[in-house]
Image 1: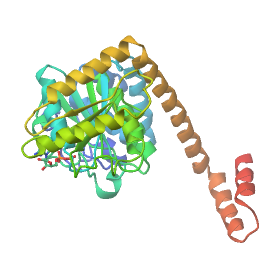
Image 2: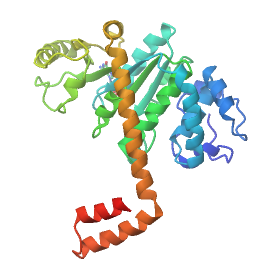
Image 3: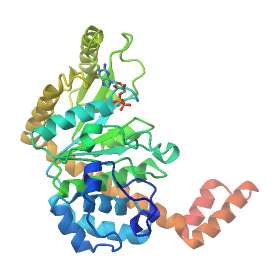
Image 4: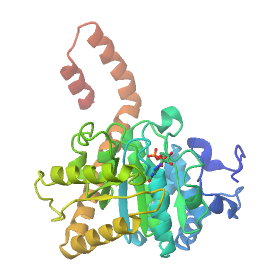
Length: 356
Ligand code: GDP
């Protein structure tokens, strides 16, 4: 297991997350913890598929310490040419719908085919309640011991943007380490589905059959984002209800305009617990890949996503640089004081600060 509170775990200074939930990988940690590996060592080991080095590099990515971030950026830059050779799948659904059960079943299905599966999470609430998804090590019990799987809890962070950026960088590291299927799980807090959608190739919405009015309670925009809607828990008494839900979702999907990808989103049913319908979902994803790789959409979308993230990173860094500037810190306090006294307007105050 991972030894906590050892001073040698330098990278942990800036972060509060466990290194990994993967027991198998934790056991294999051979690297010398008293010595911080060089960028060269990190890159070589990650490209060799070393899970301990991958874990430790992700910890650097997640760190708020400036030195760690610098090193993380150097590692990322060197790993980037080896990334991209993967399928990135986003999975969302309300708590209890069966996300972890599904990911376990789907993940095992893939590892049995000798695929390497990395599971990452985006949970902006995890900094508040210490990881409501993936933080719990009892989840995905079989997958965590699978040597072809790597499971990493949601990074903690103050903003969704920050958490999402760290996850995106972790995707690159996982891909460089040879993981060909990256699953990003989110619990749908705030705008987290949009964040996940902006970094995946295929977006899957997990549902359960409810009381009949299936479209009630689904956040606006989620259906538009979905490439597949999977109705889970289609077993026992639920099979009939799941079939009805499938019809209703199919009808709803046809009301939306065709997607730019030319892909017609599909509705499937499955039982994650009984492993029914899992192969069909994988076939569907493969059909999507075949279509979008052939018509150019796959590459186009990844390029668009890269541009989006380039701009998002610049926005973030400009903002950070602005608010952390000592002059701005001082002058901002003055302007807030002036505002309170009614001596200025927000617009004049903003202009003065920006002109500085
Ligand atoms: P999550 O919160 O979305 O990750 O949901 P979990 O995977 O933790 O599942 C929530 C509950 O639903 C657990 O008690 C599971 O055993 C159960 N569950 C998950 N998938 C299925 C399924 O396919 N059929 C049935 N009957 N129960 C399931």
